[in-house]
Amino acid sequence: MKHLINTRDFSLEEINDLYDRAEVFLDNKQRNILQGRMIITIFFENSTRTRSSFEIAAKRLGANVVSLDVSHSSSSKGETLLDTAATLDAMGPDAIVVRHKRAGVPHILSKHVKCPLINGGDGSHAHPTQALLDFFTIRQHFKGKIKGKKIAIVGDIKNSRVANSNIELLSRAGLEVILVAPPHFLPKTNLSVSNSIKEVIDEVDIIMSLRTQTERHANQIYASLKDYAEDFCITLDLMGKRDILLLHPGPVHRNVDIDDIMMEDPRCQVLEQVKNGVAIRMAVLVKLINEQEAKN
Ligand code: NCD
View (cartoon, rainbow, N blue to C red):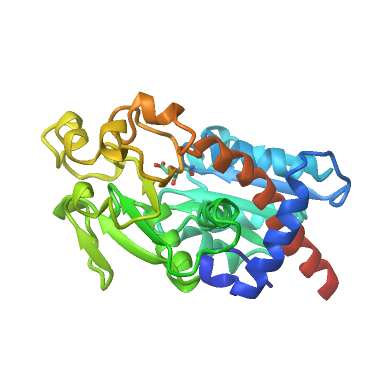
């Protein structure tokens, strides 16, 4: 059974096909490709955009969606994760989308269900659909000419599943990745690193700013977000007139990650990412559900 737990689950060839399909879905038209199918979303951790993006994607394909409100589900009554998975599975869904604050949960659950399982983000481990939509946005912007393009991933990289998934996917696709963060936000890595965005800004074609994952810090690391912002916020002053694509997975901490002015700047493609996200998730749902049906 094919699941999407991390970006390595799809080869570059599969990703090319996925993008061809996603491009068609950018027209936002209602389709009936998954008419009568049932998709369950279960988010054990807060989410605004990822969950609604999956649900809109499923509905645009004609599928039915059941979103489990975890605060009301039996997991808050002490049911184990595996029992929750078995219960959901017994209802016969065609796909399940899971987000959990613990890394590895989607992988474990995938072993206990009879339909494709999609990781909607697990701890600081992986967020494959986010990386897929980010790479799609980059390819679209550079009209496919992405080999050798340089991207700076800026911010709380160590705690970011978005960074992890992007590092894997973008490196595999031939982009050069530089990690830019204060030392305590940097993971152990073989990639080039810098502690200063000013130092690398002249070399890069793309900046991916990330949110400081305060909920994953055991204790407060930066004296204040204001101090952090002074060094790492993407401002108009920093960007100048440089032709750099600016991305952020959201939610944006305004004036900490990106300042108000840059949020309105045409180089900032945050809303394009959101739009592309729906088309990418439609393509992922179609791919996994069709492949599963072809096997049966
Ligand atoms: C991210 C997440 O939840 O991993 N948001 C998202 O899915 N668009 C990033 C974040 O929370 O900072």
